[in-house]
Length: 392
Image (cartoon, rainbow, N blue to C red; front, side, top):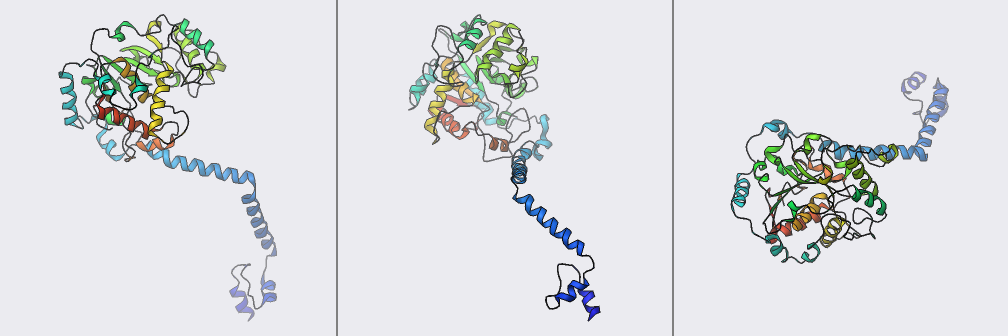
């Protein structure tokens, strides 16, 4: 029996319920019991402590975001196989349609005539495009919807601008003008629309969307580049064929940045800390080539988008939607390229210039891209704008 008892003891915690004394007597290392008990107590205290719970929560949160974002930044197998040497246009039908539009004569007031058929048209008419000293701005709303609290910053910025309003080239008095708003969407990749885009009178681009190296799909000219400081291109090559940079104000310090760039007086070290990423300090353009986008463009666009969503409160539109509304103020005919987020296909390319995929959009919570897509679809359906890449 003793032999059997010794043979049956595998774990000190698994003693025989019929012979407790014998089991205890057969246990050679009672210290091990204390170590196991201490280990269990330590584990229990770890999972009950607030600091430990906080650490575990942070690890889980980082893990969840990594699961969403990291795959979106990895190139798909199809992209790896095609690469940037893929020479065939993705959609010959869209390319031919774009060519056909350019052969037709420009139609004066085309956008205005078709825009008025929409119920939301009243909020999209006669919006000032750039901030001027003799035109009022909404002081009751904070940036980017207004300029509340930015009075002194704006005064300094306007003082550095020789020509703050619309230049003669954008007034279009007596001429019919076509606008092209180039979005950053991946649908533009492989479109071969570059030569068509360059034929438009006014070409609007957004933030740091690159041009050199992407001329085949995105064109080579830029009339207006809408951007905020953190989105300004750092390469001087991006400004070589740029007529104008228009600042979109998201905070008062953005106006100080513009003043600094124009006057060549660098910002202080403490001021730079308020930007969420490193900003460019020099832009190779003359002072007369800078403007400040009127916040009414952002505000009115957001008000229209409110009709396409159930969300409450003021909406902040993307630069893309705001650029479309700006184009409606400047041109007789407006075309779009590179617009439309295909959220149903997370493997699709997000931007035309990089391999980030559509899944990365899941992490952003600032813009309602679904509401914007419905708004832009209505503009296309009404004939107020034309979607050249067909993703809307």
